[in-house]
Length: 417
Length: 146
Image (cartoon, rainbow over all chains, first blue to last red; front, side, top):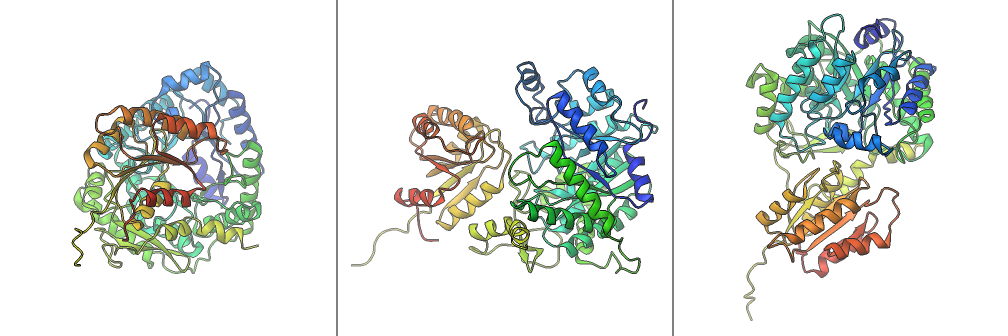
């Protein structure tokens, strides 16, 4: 750890102690100069920031030869090809930018991340994210057991960096499919993946949750995640990361800004330590560095204006989300205390069933709906959730209803002016 | 005269992404739409390689194959799908359409449509052409009331 004396996990923990929300962009470029510029501008932003290296889709799918070929031919990549690039170039990229005041997290989206993790270890990059379920089911066809086996090896590789390096993994489990997954299931998957990382030697962990349709429900969810993390991860350093809405984004600049500011308020009120921002350009194209910087600064301002949640707030374990998440987590751990073995079996039996997820490992019997602004279950399939019918009656969910649900948040924020 | 026509079998559709496209909301939407038109739907999901797509078509013997893609690579991926599927014995005459956001710049290019049709698709639809898609399904006689 010559490059950064303060690790990602310690940096966020210190910010949390001082009551400042850490803000983070999603940012990745194939070009070294642009990537460096993005990191420098993030570091200089008027906000407490951490840096992001988002990898390209060739690297994500393990096609490093295609990434090398693209680099050699000057073809634009949609992220940073950390495996295909010589390590010396990545070390140069980070020199003088990544330091005690600016840790960097590598974001990749890979269901089979072993090559990536090996490269991170070689570069002393200790912070990354993902998970055996959250990067397998939504975006790949990788069989779930194959993904779990690879994540076991990869996680243990990172853990071997040792205590001083403080390797950190964030579960992406609170972001399943971006939208329309009810909070109880998001909280459960995020917690279970965190537990998986802990069981394979990682002692610094973050758990995620993505903004959904209703601020009070989101707050309830993050508080539930906090209670469960305190109980299930007693011997780990952990924090919560809140994602600005990941579904269909408002098309107007004003709508996008309002949605982002609401995310900042919810993050602070619910005690998240870090937030991943979105920009006003989100609905239209990949944002520029300057659009990212503006979003980081706006988010930090909105967070600073929001007072933290009053201490007299309701018992976080007394909510529908908490009850649901706890029932799901317990049902999975009842199958096997080894989370890596329990997870694929839980999906096979439908104890976990992600609505609208088409991966062959997902039973696909659960469906959600938006009821009075809140995300609810339309059917729960075989999940151990008390309320809600188990099967969908024919014609109950139409194509038009689905479309309206997908655009619910976009339309509410775009027309709320 | 008593109606002696046997009850009509529900048509089957296969809905699929392309090999490079991991988006799935479009596939879920197309499934619901086809189910509303009376179809049984086999949804193959994200990132489907051409070979798997052809195997699944041989297995399910669908009346219609719907390829839906929104990642901007649909034109290139679609050409590969058409040439592979049409080369497989038993799939030469399968009714096969493609639609969505098929190119990166979002502009519909008539040249693209022509080349996809020449490669073997029976119809090509932009993401704003759902009514045309519905009519196509009806004209093919593939609509039954649900």
